[in-house]
Image 1 (cartoon, rainbow, N blue to C red):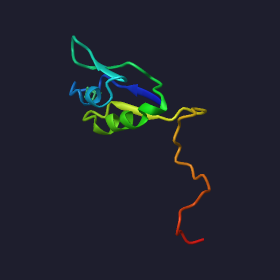
Image 2: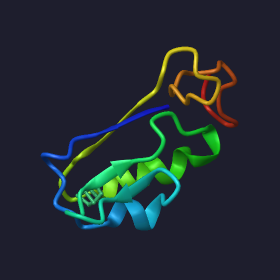
Image 3: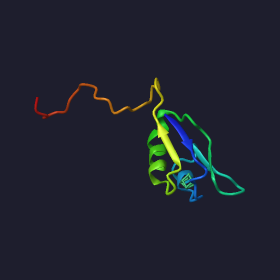
Length: 86
Ligand code: SF4
């Protein structure tokens, strides 16, 4: 997972810090977002995605890094679903 922030879009609401405090912080001077971890581990993926979804400024971008062992690409593993027609 690769995270980036755009301070030009940040409106200092603090939602990201409340949601993922080990990944995001806010500047003491202006309240704008500060990124603490650009490549958080898989254990933080859910809260980082939630922070991005909740960000009112759409200032947080999350992408899956190629080769990232924690990347959830959404790819079909071929296992199928129980009860799914063949
Ligand atoms: S949630 Fe978005 S707008 Fe609010 S502080 Fe974080 S990056 Fe900035």
